[in-house]
Amino acid sequence: MVSALVTALRACLVTLALTGILYPLAITGAAQLLFPHEADGSLVTDERGQVVGSALISQGFSQAGYFQPRPSAAGNGHDATASSGSNLGPTAQKLRDRAQADAERLRQENPDAPGPVPAELVTTSGSGLDPHLSPEAAHWQVPRIARARGVAPERIQAVVDANAEGRTLGVLGEPRVNVLLLNLALDRQFGRLPPQPQTASGAR
Image (cartoon, rainbow, N blue to C red):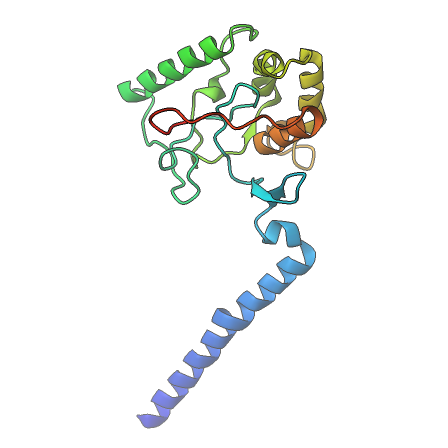
């Protein structure tokens, strides 16, 4: 009986050491060696070297001079600690009302935008933290950003095209642009916009 218990305990300790300590350390070490940027969270820094976010997690941008991402149902919106979708189905009145309100706001904010509001600008992703837009959804916002920054739309369009990413390995996914990286590229080329003043409620 004692011998069996000792054998079982020894096997348990060896398994714990292998799978709970050595294997995680080996994988973490390999990741740091082969993919250090990704292993550290794909952190993004500005021109001053300060970390401003992650290329994998969306952020909310409301100023007219910046590209806006997809809406987010994560927490109160773009909350990296509460990744989630809205769980609302296509027949949900709440979802339709929210999408219609967002579409109307976007039309008011983008009076010179070409064509209808792109669907992805009024629909959330499954995680609520999708950092990308299609190039088409970014191009749709170009007139507003050009007007807010006082530059020609063609110059904003060129920034979008320069930051567009192709399909992964040439076949996976769709062409896309990372909204955070795109906005940082705007600041580098045209200057950082002053922070939006606080309203009486504290909202931006």
